Amino acid sequence: MKRLALAVALLSSAALSGTLLDFQSREPAWYARNDTVMGGVSNSRVQIGGGVLQFTGQVRLENNGGFSGIRSNPSRFDLSQFSSLRLRVKGDGKRYALQLGTSTSNGVTYRNEFNTVAGRWIEVTIPLNSLRPTRSGERVAGPTLDSSKIIFFGLVIGNNRAERFALEVDWIKGQ
Image: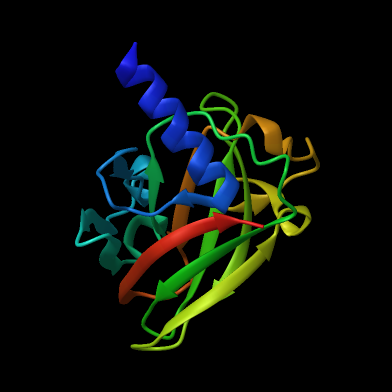
């Protein structure tokens, strides 16, 4: 019972501060989700260490490929109290997309892109109402995002070119 009370207290403290993910622990776990699901040959790696999530790899265009991505294991995130997400990232000057998912079965994710500055930590703000529904990277009509039912976070790179990439994320906060 004490462990549950401590977990609830920590969760409440994080929610009050707006910090959703700070990568100080390995929870939730993350996994790669690349174009190999469609026959492509891109690859990526995700690891958490030193309080930072690292997303690295290579996008390749063979076999109609062209994207690499990562996702958090399903969990519950109620973001309805926030109007935007803020990320502290250090990239390689390339464009990435943040994804949110409300289901693991319908293939729809909600995404918006952001730019990075090579070798510099920056903060990026993404309004929740700017996230658009997509399926396999293509925009679809609805459904609209229900921010109270988020079950995973994701990051994707797919700039229509073969390229190596490296992105670090220090934290993700709601605001």
